[in-house]
Amino acid sequence: MDKSKKFADWKPRDRVAHLKRRMFETADSQRIDQRLFRLFDTAGTGPEGDGAFVVGETGVGKTTGVRLLTDRIYEELRAEDPSGKWSRPEIAGTDLRPILHETANGFKRPIAVVLVGKNTTFSSFLGDTADAIQVNLPVGYKFGEAQLRVNKAVKKQGIKMVIFDETQHIVEGNMNTYDAGDVFKLLIKSRVQVVCVGLTHALDLATANDQLDRLVKKKIVLEPFRCTVGDFPELDKKGNMVGDEVQEPTEFRQLMALIDYREGTDSVLPFDKPSKLSAPDMALRIHQAGGGYIGRIMPLIYEAATLAIYDGSAWITKSHFAEAYRESSRCDDKDNWFVMDFPSVMDRFGSIREKKLISTGIAKKQLERHMSKRSRRRVADVIAGRD
Image 1 (cartoon, rainbow, N blue to C red):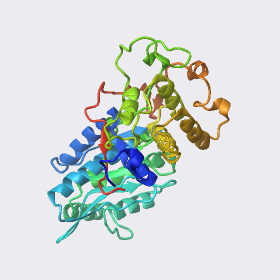
Image 2: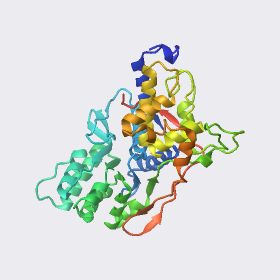
Image 3: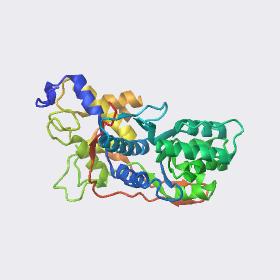
Image 4: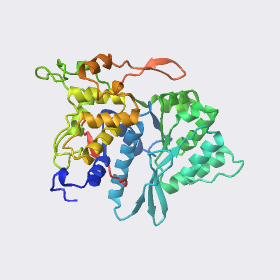
């Protein structure tokens, strides 16, 4: 396609492809990137491996944040050997992909990925982990023998990090957490960095043993974006701001503004005019429709944008959002955030979302969210072997 043209000159399918190649970095995804990159970069420097937990509710952006990190590492490693044979094989059930590098001496596997299945048992969990790093364990193996085989695989393949996705399944099933601890111990003793991704109750694994407790203490807890009517100056009945805005935009509004930012054909949204997503009349509706969860908000924006592209609109309107939300939520129009008038939106919006108390099985404690006021880098084109 000719990027010197306006978006209106592109074919609709090219505009949709442009939109869906984009991923967004938030303050939370940056924390994931910084913490886990340090783990990856220091792998093998200590007598044992280390690790961390990345937890939060479904749709809060855990997997996306980890995927941004692995995609960045993939691009950096590939740049060191651009003529090499690199691949990112898909794993059914997760968006996370390992990194493989075919060399003259065999496959290197800087990052491996394990999807923890529902109702997992010790045998299936160990088997899936062994398969992910190409280790064959004989029937009736002993721990020492398994350790030797894992060590050999780690050295031969240059494995630096193993990422476990959906780790809450270990807690939810009948598997003894001490047994799970033994699997993690195989990797930790081989100086591999372990990353566990899952829902917040995956932190219950801390009760397994001292090594897992050490990993749980190094945790990143993600929460939904917060947004309230108080994030804006005084508003009139149509949702327009009365007077000038003096407060710094919240993280959610910054993200909406960045998604909507116009930078020619390098813009995120493939439209030639802004859709004003960060304006109160749009931002409040989008936030409520997605509940503050980035994993719900972005598909809604993608679908509304697709509808606007195919009907020839110059930007995304509330009507496009209303149709997209109607299809995804199957709600009546009286409950459609993009159909109701603005006074009804304000009336039903509610108060500030309260931080949730998360039980770890040890004690109840409030987990404060760490948010940077400004992201250094908000929008990333992530191609990294992905379409």
